[in-house]
Image 1: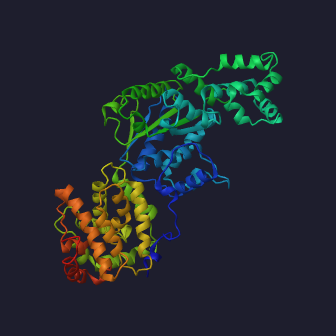
Image 2: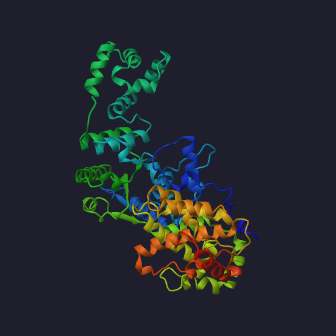
Image 3: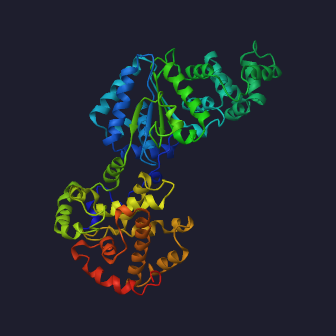
Length: 531
């Protein structure tokens, strides 16, 4: 049996859509829907993801008839899947339809409890104004005003222009029952409707159409300019009351306000060190939570818990429902999405690992990331990656990436996705070598001046040479990683010895590492990088 035969989906043909990055917005283009469908198909709804979704839906349903709907804060380290979680909730909330007739709830593999909550949500929506969802980032909207930035997200979700005065104007056209008529008149004159709205104050076609549709109100094109400027002036900010009125007008259908979800991604990033922004976000969330009779649910995301920084602490009283994602959730996603195995492959993998347990159990012995007894149950799920090597990668990534953006879900998803493609044609029992991390990140490390140019050039050159040269390149790459990790983290207790290198380089478990242990000293004693 080859490694290729053990996977549920052949890694060589599987594409990691969007490099594992979830973008939270209301984009409904064909490409965006294809990404969304892939994310729904691979959504792993268990662990904190399941608990979080269940808690959010349960709390919302309980508070629909109450005066106030508590807001939700979803936190977790950079790339832990916060955006993915809220994007999935947004799609499931409105049961996003796809061109072939499939819907979000039908595509996703969900626990029964979540399905029951969503069913109850839809039942309650029939009594109210249906279901609605809006999502985006505040930073992508009106930079100066939190209220206008939020309104842009809501207007877009309702199919309205994003600019406040123009959206209000279109809502007025709809309320007057002349929206279609005015649009047809504009297009009959040969003008583009979207362009006319964008140039609202000076749009000749739009003004001429208004004179025809509403002659009593607009006696001439000149009076149009004056009236539109007076009624819908350009503004830098709006009051909370104006914001609430605009939300109500944009979303209310047949006199009923829908059960509405608003997802604001990267709120913490938007606030940053700006305490004024923190206060404005707090005011906006408070106004929305208290003014729609429990129908509007607000969700914000950030890398730290809402009590984590002094600026976020101001939001503590507003975001009272908290969902925290952790490393354990990352492991679950990787095992269930990228490393998912055929059911019949479990026993052969277990047998191979059991046969070679003596070899595996001595890897990195004496370090805090060495073999542990509780690794054994995870062998079939993690294969062809040994748990010791996963820990080595995770700890090394954290050291190499001081900004905290790489040792996370999307990079691990991407790296695991690539690394398992390197030994698909090897027989069962061949695992991936730990030096993969070095070659995968060498160019990036050179650019960020972490890796010396000479080390980069030599290792890349040797990696294309003879068998001995290739082994030397791999060993030198590992020495670099081990020295970085050991130098920054003494507690791990790892040193670049021959035994350590052999533990991390061995690929064919059944052959053992004794051959490597005898070859490495001869090669490395004459290595110019290590002299």
